[in-house]
Amino acid sequence: MGSRRRQKKIAMIGHKRIPSREGGVEIVVDELSARLVAKGYQVDAYNRSGYHVSGKEFDERRGKVYKGIRLITIPTFNHKKLNAIVYSFLATIRALFGGYDVIHYHAEGPCIMLWIPKLFGIPIVATIHGLDWQRSKWGNFASKILKLGEETAARYADEVIVLSQNVQTYFEETYQRKTVYIPNGIHRPKQSKPEIIQEKYGLQGDDYILFVARIVPEKGIHYLIRAFYGIRTDKKLVIAGGSSHSPEYRDQIRAMAAKDKRIILTGFVQGKELAELYSNAAIFVLPSDIEGMAISLLEAMSYGNCCLVSDIRENTEVVMDQAETFRKGDVEDLRKKLIELLENQSRRLALKKGSRDYICNRYNWDEVTAQTILLYEKVKK
Image (tube, rainbow, N blue to C red; front, side, top):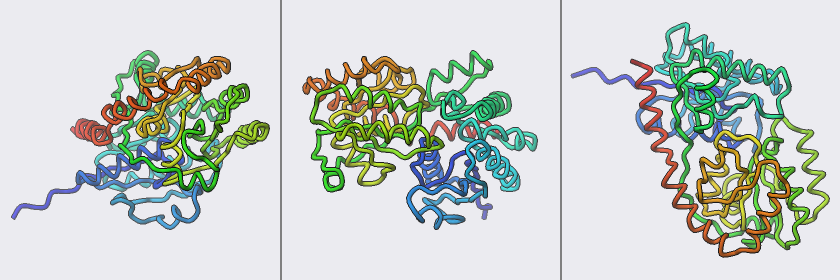
């Protein structure tokens, strides 16, 4: 009898933790890793300690298996300037002894350590989820570290994955580095009736404007609130998301929301409550200054939402002609477009009708996984 074929091993380094919806990186690692396991790979996900989102659920998985993915928790501390560096270093040292066929780094900060396994001849793939050093939540020191991580990925990674054609152009012009464009995927979800959101917030369906993302400056929530102030409507504005490294901005948004009783801050949401919010919104708005590839936008369109987004390329590449856009950072233009959509129900319905099939047919997690596997096979040769 022939010997049993060895299971290929992949390490995922860079996310905060899975299972989690703390950010797009976590969702990508979760979705990709689970599908790799289904394809016969052994996947180890290197979680960070010190992150708490929804109680004990995550801590209880420490050192266990989730969706067939082995979870390895790396001790670190919750310090926004040094957390990613310490975690990445410790995870990298641990991964050197894991016998991995490929180590897959995610996000710019953790990429700062990928040169270490490269010295040992371990194949490296890096996914740049966005140009993180541009985000306003980071100070000068942190921005330099993130930029160094980006440069390290460009120089040492065997393959670099980017989520937008805009970032692909940036890497080629800045580093003369060829990258591989593999966008995020999405499911085709089931619509949910307004039950939880009716009980908690009094929402009936089609009676609110929705924002879903982290409460951080680059998401542009302050533009949306200012635009909403000037609109005469009975519809509410629902802002769903937790804060991340930006307590001052979170407090600013809370103060702005307190001035208008129509504004609802839900905090972090997930599961059925999030599904209900997506399923029953009149309009979904993403007013970002900076994005990588917004998972919340893909999700909103997959639920058949009428979407209004800032005209940055990372958004317009996703929506094409299946959503409305406004000029980035222009509160007056945002207000104007919101009023137009609120007053034009036929336009809202047309966008709702087209967005669901468009996004679910174009972005598919199985295709993302297949393209990623091709890269793994390429770097191993």
